[in-house]
Image (cartoon, rainbow, N blue to C red; front, top):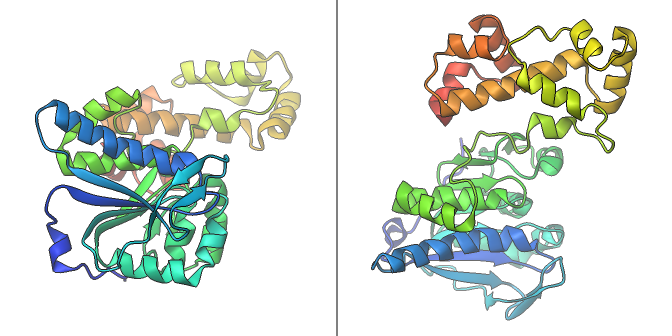
Length: 334
């Protein structure tokens, strides 16, 4: 069972404005920190413009005290780590190249473990999950991090149920997000939970970002993952996405790029690391996911539009690639 943090009674319903702390360290990733920080700050600005009081007080804290340098060389003014028992609403742990050194700092990890007990919710951005995991806060929980570090997180912390695909994961009061800009998605979801969809939408519009990519949306698109340096099959992938409901057999695809089926199959595998059939299946599943979360079309109709032929074929592909059914995916992410 997950280890639920013991929240202080006064932290359950903190008075406004709510205190938000973002934990920094030497060589922190700047966007991991500034993305969520700006979302909460813009939420305050939106409320102020509407004649309402700010909802958050924002604090960037670090064991180093008054100053740390981000991984891009930019100096950050920070506050010293506050008392562990001070009432706290939201604790955010940023990631970055310096996270391993931070996670190896017993004093910081001990403070973080105790500080989390005073927080209503705890979260990490990108590789900040390693620092959060080092504190034990992810034991027995679902979590994510940047896609390129998911295997390492699972290896180093086997008690964490790492999910490599989602933009962010919420397991009770503990939130984790994927790489870098996914911290903005996580913070927008928190603002929506706190202040409602209208405020979150206003913040997203101001920041010129998507309001809310569902937490279960892939960290990057299948089409993007198929790209290589020379992108020799980029035009083919665009054509496939425009013709998902049609016959996309090996012979059809080979003809589209003017190759023999055997030659195309070999060159495609060398370029993308997967077979044409598997790539087509992934592109079809990606489109089905979009339709399930953004439309009210029946699952049978979605299966047809995406080229699966039958609802059962769609179901088998979802189970194989996502370990869930289309119905369960819609219930969770629509």
